[in-house]
Length: 318
Ligand code: ADP
Ligand code: MG
Image 1: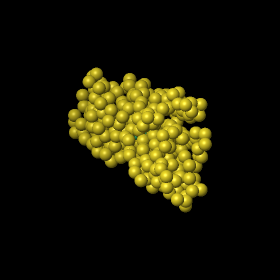
Image 2: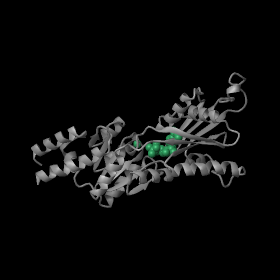
Image 3: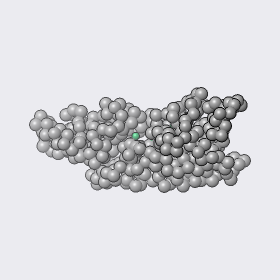
Image 4: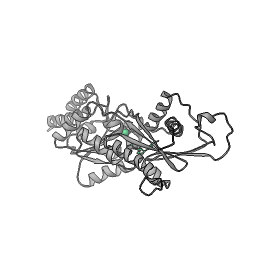
């Protein structure tokens, strides 16, 4: 590589919002044949908002949101922030948990003082049993022995809850289940808008003969809907965060040259494993430090630019 062509490529990248960590990063981007993309915060805005609430019969909607938000105030997950914000918007005060457990890739398990969440009993005596709240995906509920419909004696009530959740997922919404004291109490729908440039960028990658694969911990239905909206070739859903790097490695073992685009702490090992790691500039520091390239604005079209610039630089070299 001539130093001049690298300098020119680096300068052009900087103007296009593509920051290369090194000359190797610039030169290495050109023969990528597979781009793996994280969903939340990479393809989507990463600003989830509460869009819908369905309660089980006899459960008050405000109580449901208050209990869910109180549990989620112990979590840093973007979904947790959406629920906490929804409670603030409704002027619902949080209750402090006596204890909580954050289950990676699943949700939150929290315990509250007796009498919590019943507004009319707020100043009454706090005796009786502690209140147990689960907030997360189906895997969390199943792991805690809560069946999701068909096997239950209160079949009709819970079945409609889980059926509605499915239909929300098929619309691209993320569902969050809430169980109180071992019973399904409701489900929350959260939406996270696709970034305006994502569809075009993925189209441009596919057009260059590069296969595009979306990875997410989200459920299959939601993932397939979002993947379809932006046109990725493949969707791998319901994965644990630590699986991302392994998936990149497996693709490399099949002979692919893999670029990974991600924003989260969870993405850092996969960004490091990839032949070319590209971090979203608005993402976490850990992701940026693990990557070869930073896409300053977070617009995925900059990833296409990075690959094109590298190809152009290599053409000047040979
Ligand atoms: P992603 O970055 O794709 O959301 P995660 O591994 O962080 O992947 O989460 C996977 C899934 O686990 C989420 O889609 C959600 O269903 C569930 N989950 C994780 N943490 C929480 C939480 N604090 N509240 C609710 N659900 C959660
Ligand atoms: Mg992400």
